[in-house]
Length: 273
View 1: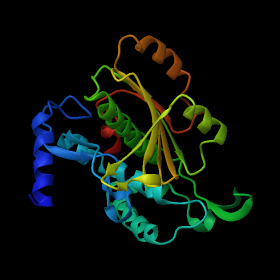
View 2: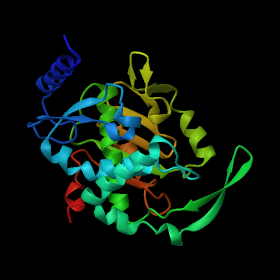
View 3: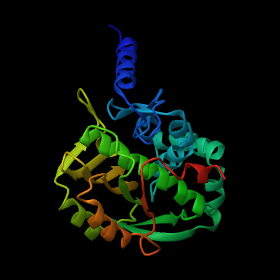
View 4: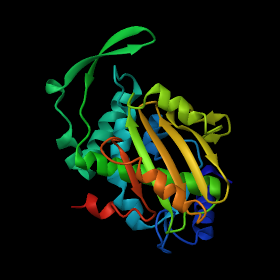
């Protein structure tokens, strides 16, 4: 059987076995969602896996958020070279079409503040690009929520129930401190990445996680080392009171990029306004 036929069979199997959209309660899950999206990977050469049945509302409505995440995952703090330059240009075009407010929030490079970054003991000149506007946050929040539900579905083996709770926090470039990073890893002993034969996603996409394999997962996901998503997702009644109390204290201005939300991507409607 040819490669195209194998892909079609896999797609048909995913759609046939799905009872609903991976993100919301819609039973009209007629499209395939790749999380993380192909645009995150060099030449869109993405190892297979992490593919889900999805409804049109969630798939089409979140394309702008995927484009914004792809853009920031590829922008490095010091220099961009090789394939990333061309792919950033394509991501920028997608953001301009699907999430134009995000571009208007980015500070012009000519007005950006120069900074010095320490990399392996050497100081490098870099430019600080402001990316903290409401549209940027809204799109990255939607992407992070999608990533949390995709991670839950992958390791729990089913979509989240609609009464679940989701906490995410995203970081750009070196936004997450080393102490916080290593503290997070200490409670997430398992490691994974996309694999297809000998091909792996490597630094392009990998995660550390911990799960009870029933109704709770915590994870720390990295895209190219430039975009990081921390997540907690659960729909277990035994965890809800504790999580509500703990996670409410972890959101707000003191934790930029943080949100407490629920399955269903309720913020999609805000993205259209």
